[in-house]
Length: 481
Ligand code: GDP
Image (cartoon, rainbow, N blue to C red; front, side, top):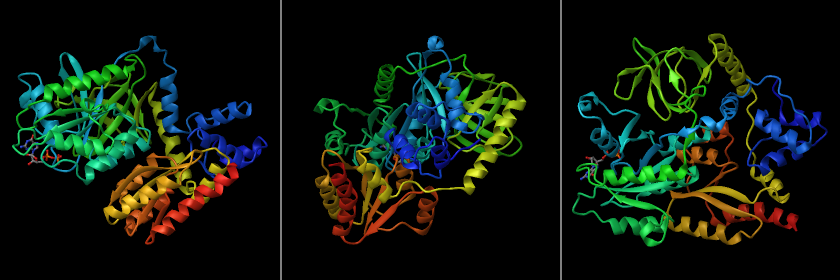
């Protein structure tokens, strides 16, 4: 049975605030009307010294899947290949680079199999595999992460050597940093006469992306998607990073894969492009994927060839689901057809119930209350302004009003309107508030923010903005003392 925060609090004689505070301290944002997830229930049980039994373990889809995987004993663990995402400003060569890497690394004789650009593929470098995913953009990348589907292990930021850092490069840096993945910078178009590696390094260093040879920790690799120059170097670096990450998974576990793309294909039905995160996905497996389910009818690999199975970090297209799954959802193998169908049905009902009881995330005032209790130390914000000058001024002022107890954490600051990309970034950082100065969200962005419970405050006077944040922070600073 589902239980809401206030119901749980009532049942164990605590106030809803106590429950919210415990979860908040652990980075989980809930309001009193939210349903508690199984992991939250377990944490609360431990925290309050109460035995919590969960009657229906199917309630929270993604959590249960993770839970089952965590049951696996790690003696079966083997090293798995890294999954890499490339992001960058438009026209800096993301697509060209993805295509060049693929065409130059594919086994001889198979090059003819490459007919079109695909959303994920696996290559081999020195007998070691690397899987590349083409996310439709950095917003999609963070949207996946917000859903808990952080399939990416390493992020490559591509910057054109002649153009340097552009507005979207800055956005990408924010998204990549927020992901916590190691970052490698590929400086593309090095074949061009106007290429200037030092300029790129200097601009990136300004964004706290300092190159290793300048005393920082970010590798910059010069490449050309046209000539292929530097690509081996880039791949070697990816493998090096992967080694440090010690990526491991169990090839014998129940298969769990992440859907990176999906579509309804004429004559073939729903097709899901997946990357296997654990176990081995086989033809004949009973699968459930969010609220869809089915039996794996066929798998084609990234070369379009039919295969019987997909191993760790491998990618391919899966046929056999009863409906098109959402990108970012997990595909998990189940013991039986019946089990798969039951889980999918329960989830569908659950989703409907949740839709009906949508509650908002924490507001600025509630946030102040929580900071006042010393439960959080940071107020994450995204700042958008009409011109660069005011951006710097606002950032500077916000940084000045913070003290040791509480501070504003600027997740992203940029010039331009408030976009869907900002919303996604905000929802990936718990409790994040979007501050607009002389910029407003469009109607659709506004609606989406409301639906997602993300607070957008817009201002036309800098002092108002600063005062609001000051109030939020200082009200609680005195309370802390
Ligand atoms: P995306 O928008 O980042 O995916 O960029 P594309 O891959 O579509 O590339 C944008 C443009 O830059 C195209 O005209 C490419 O031919 C060109 N381009 C990409 N990589 C290189 C490169 O290494 N050298 C040169 N000279 N041009 C490149």
